[in-house]
Amino acid sequence: MRRLAALGALLLVSGCASLEYYAQAVGGHLEVMRLAVPIEERLREADTPEPLRAKLAKVLAIREFASRQLGLPDNDSYRRYADIGRSFVVWNVFAAPEFSVKPLESCFLFAGCVSYRGFYSEEAAERHAAALAGQGYDVYVGGVAAYSTLGWFSDPVLSTFIQYPEPEVARIVFHELAHQVVYVKGDTMFNESFATAVEDEGVRRWLEREGTPAQRAGYEASGRRRAEFVALMTKSRAELAVIYDRPLEPAEKRAGKRRLFAAMEDEYRSLKASWGGFSGYDRLFARGANNALLASVASYSELVPAFRALLAQKDGDLPGFYAAVRELGKLDKPERAARLAVLGR
Image 1: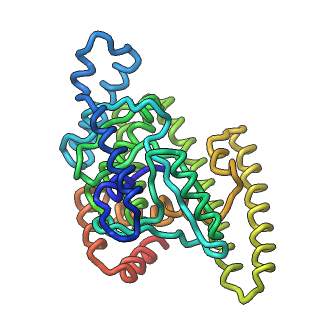
Image 2: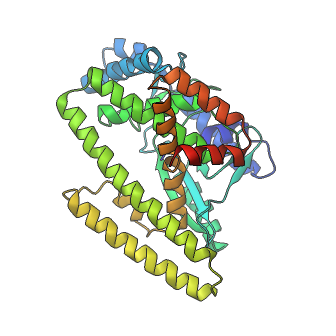
Image 3: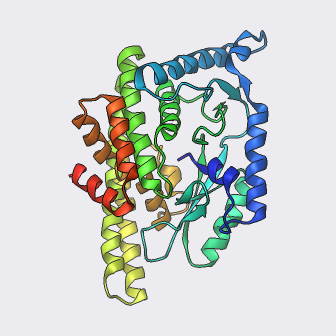
C-alpha cells in the first residue's frame, strides 16, 4: 500500500485539512527530497556498499526499461536515491463507517478527494486513526514504501524498498510512474487500479526480457497468491454490502458483520495453508479485519480486470492503452464507472 499522499500533502489548500497536517506533510516531503542523491553519484562513491551498489545499478536499468519499453515518463523521477532511515516513508490512514464498505474521503484542491490520508509520522497516523475510531469509524493504518507526486517533483528511489526482490522494486517504480501518465482528480480506485494494471504488465515484460526462470516462477506464484487474496477480500466486501443495505437493526448488522469477518479470517487461514504457510498478508489482519481494510484493498484492485481487458483490446499496445485510459478519465464518474463495469465483465 503506497502512494499519492505527498500530492495531497504538498498542494493541499482546502478547508478539509488542518494547518498542522499541512505542515507535517510539507516538512516530511522536503526532508525526503533533501536526502535524495543522484544514483550515478552514489555509484561513483567508493564507500557505497557493494550490495547497495548492485541494487542501484539494477534500479537504473529498470528505470530505463520503464521509459524505453513501457512508454512511461522519461524524467528525473527514480534516478536519485534517498536513505530515509525508516521502514516506511508514510503511513496511510483508511477509514469507513461502521456499516459501509465505502471509504471516508479526504479532499484536496489539486488532488481532489482521495480515500485515505497520509502521514510522515507513524505516531501522527495512529493519533488520527484513534480520533476517527472514537467517532465510530472502522480504521486501518498501513505503512507505505513509496508514493508519487504526479510529476510535480522528481520522486526518488527510497531505502524503504531498495532491498525488496527485483520484481517488487520494478513493480513499485512502474506503478508510481503510471500515476504520472494518468491521474483523475477525485477517483482513487480508478487511479490505483490503472497503476496496478500497468505494474503487472510492466513486471511481466521486464521478467520476460531480464528475469531468470526462478524470478519468473516466483513472481507468478506471488501473483497467484495475490489474486486469491484479492478475490477473498472482494467477495467479503460484496457480502458485507448486502448486509449493510438490508433494513436491519444495528445490533443485527453488527452480528452479521462479526460472522462474516470471522468466516473471512477462517478462509484466509485455509488459503495460507494452501500457500505452504506464506504469511505475507498477516500484517493486514494484525488488528482484525474491518471495513476500512476491505476499502483499502479494493482501491488498488477492484478495477484491475477492466484495465487488463482494455489493454487486451489494444493488443498490448501500451501507448494506445494509455490514450484510451485518458479518454475514460475525461468522462464524468458515473459514465466512467459504467464503461469500466462493461470492460470488467
